[in-house]
Image (tube, rainbow, N blue to C red; front, top):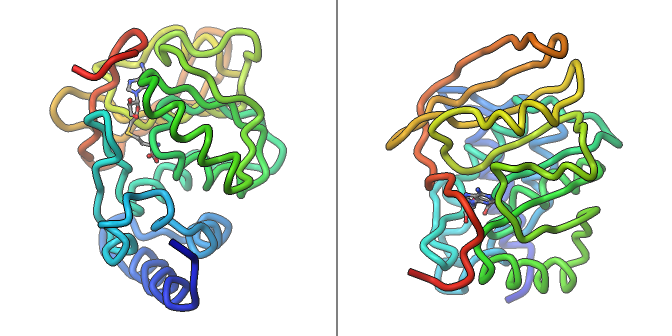
Length: 220
Ligand code: SAH
């Protein structure tokens, strides 16, 4: 598969839809520009090529999904990313959300628990030239202590509650964006005000695959 002017046209339309939608329209120009630039169809199986720029989720293997473009854009907007920040992402998956963050010029640490996806996306990133600071095969519930604290933490799987270890790895003034709940999730933003205090904002409900514990080396 290649990236062509036709794909670019579809991306422009997608961005327009993200800006004009009724619920949680996206207005952060840097986020929109990343969506406009990144060839989402290349992150998907070629059978989904024609639908890659519709606002839908797709299977990416190992029983996982790539989030809808709106969900990716909305989480990124809520994260309020600034250039050069140190960011921890839980749930690398297809790498599309990681690519959005890398395009925003951050120092990205990204963790995936499914070995199959981890390997596939690592090879894909090398081919595409998306360079995270580090990709880790691991359990995101534990975060990644060697590089803590982080300016931002983004969780792209549905967590039953906010993992305490992730809160502990956030800088003072740092933000975590995390979908919380079983079944469906409430998009939740926590800002660390002091070592012990956090402010909390909640947004709409979303449907994520569950955040699970431990590394998975074999499927099912
Ligand atoms: N950001 C991804 C979304 C993938 S879906 C994308 O753009 O494609 C969520 C991903 O989180 C899945 O790949 C799943 O395997 C992973 N995941 C779930 N629980 C996890 C955990 N505890 N640690 C790391 N990754 C986890």
